[in-house]
Length: 163
Image 1 (cartoon, rainbow, N blue to C red):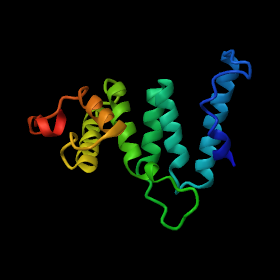
Image 2 (cartoon, rainbow, N blue to C red):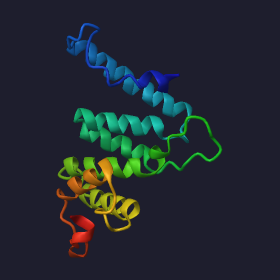
Image 3 (cartoon, rainbow, N blue to C red):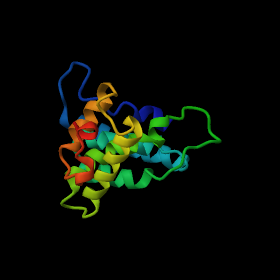
Image 4 (tube, rainbow, N blue to C red):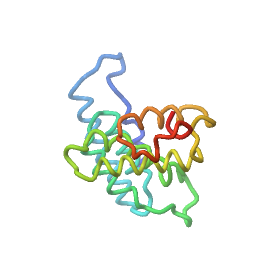
C-alpha cells in the first residue's frame, strides 16, 4: 500500500492549482518515507527504490538519486514474484538513471563519470546493437543526447554508434 500512495509524488500543488511550498515539501518527505517503507517490506524488489531514484533525478536531487541507485541497482529480477513486477526497474531503467545522474555528480563521486560512460555504453550496445540510427523513439534520442556529455574512447566515435 505504501508503494501505491508513493506514486502520487508528482503532485505539485493544491486542488486549485496554486503551488504551496510547505505542502509540497511535506508530500515529498512522505513519498520518500513511504517508498523506503515499501522497499523495507520487500527488500528483494527494486521498484520503489527505482522510483525514488527517478523522482530525485526529476527534482534535481542528484546526490540522493545516486544513493538510491546504489541501493537498488543490483537487486535481481524477482522470479518468484509475479504481481506488479516492473521489468524496467530490473533492466535498462537503472542504466538510464545512472547515465544521467553520473554526469551531475561526477565532481563529487570520483567513479561516477566512468559509471555513467559504462551505463551509456550498455544502453547503446544492448538496445541498439551498436547502431542507434536504426532504432527509433525517445530512447534513441535520450541515448544520443546523453552521450554528448561524456568523453567516449575513440573506439566509440564511429558514426554508426554515436551519431
